[in-house]
Each structure stands twice: as C-alpha cells, then as structure tokens.
Length: 196
Image 1 (spheres, one colour):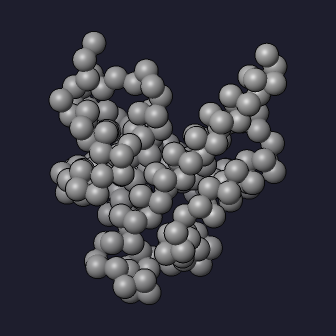
Image 2 (cartoon, helix red, strand yellow):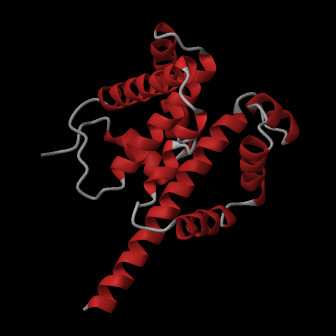
C-alpha cells in the first residue's frame, strides 16, 4: 500500500524541514487548539497537546513499517484528542483528591525509552542526547523545564521572534527523540552481536 499524499508532512518532521514544520504549525495548530478549547482547555493546553501529538506522530514514523493511509489531520487529530482526554482525567484525579505522588509527571516523550532499561540508564541516555544539542537548545530546555519560564519569556531572553522559542523547543524534542531511538537501535544491535 502506498503512502498517502500527506506523507510529506511526516517526512518533513523526520527530516526536521523548517518550511514543512512551519506549514504544519500554521495549518493544524489552530485546529488542535480549537478542539482543546471546546473540551474545557485553553490556548496553552492546546499548544502543549499539539506539540505532544507531533511527537507521537514522529515516534510512529520512526518505525520503518509506518504507512500513512489517511490525511495527516486524520492521524494527528485523534492522537491529540486522546492526549487531551488523558490530561483531563489526570487533572480530575488531582481535583477529586488523588495524590500528586501517584501521577507520573514525566512528559510522554520521555516514555520512548524502553521500560527494560533501568532508571539510571534511561537518565544517562537522555542526558547524553541533551548534551548533543547546541548551547542555545540546551538553554531552551533549561529555561523551560528547570526554570519553568513561559515561552514568551524565553523568546525575550534568547532573542527569538514571537513564538520562536515554542517552535525551537518542539524541534529540540524531535531531535532528542531521534537521538534516543538511534541510541536504542545501536544498543540493541550491539546486544544482538554479543548474543550471536
């Protein structure tokens, strides 16, 4: 079965093609934000869901057997909708009295590292990949994750145009995903050679 004509969006994500990533943002971001807003969310929620949805699409596309058989929106929309529903359920548990300690705060993109790897190895693999990023990209991660800065504050600090830090942060996560999958494949092929 051939790839759908919208596969070029997926290819653009895989190749980190700035023009195609920008086109995806312009065309699909408002739609996903609209869905989230209609489901008790706000614009910031929609932004986060959209970015996480793109990472899920990228993760799927990294499988060599991946075939896009529907329009890109037909893939992205249900992924984002389900992510938002999961987030609403998580928030509801917290509101009703669930303990925050019982809810995992690790972003979904971190779950691409297999369960079989120990926490120390997972952490080491993640930091190895983060250290391969440029200094500016490391700064974005530090400001967003450690210092909890908003994207508009990061835009100002790092001299990005409006919304530039958000796009750069998403691209960083895509690069990390590729790095982690590349490291995993390398580690798995070494294990296979040792077991041979």
